[in-house]
Length: 118
Image 1 (cartoon, rainbow, N blue to C red):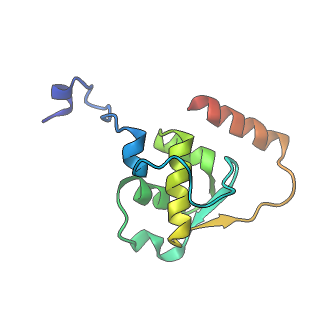
Image 2 (image 1 turned 90 degrees about the vertical axis):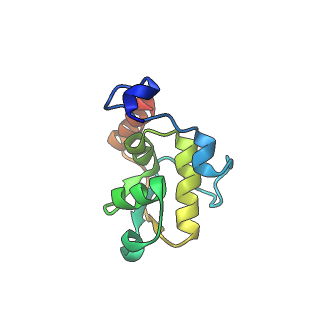
Image 3 (image 1 turned 180 degrees about the vertical axis):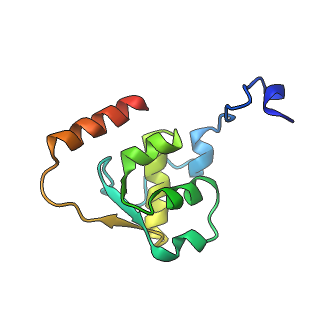
């Protein structure tokens, strides 16, 4: 079926329920993931046998990216991204990039703007 037969515009994606992306889980396996946590993919992660959002996350974090920025890029709720990211960290495909000291005002404003965009 084409997108128009579902009542969608040709450039729209069909809606996937968040619980389908996380296997029904609402809490991440890895504690301490904040919206400003910077993530980076492990070098071998691009060739890992991952599917859908997990694969897209690995593609996006070839350069460090925050959890909030991932949620915006994927257009999925922040909680969903936290669960998927936690799984990828547990599996060794993602690493948390160490952050130095306090967040700058510009970083806080950027995070605020990204969260509002959700």
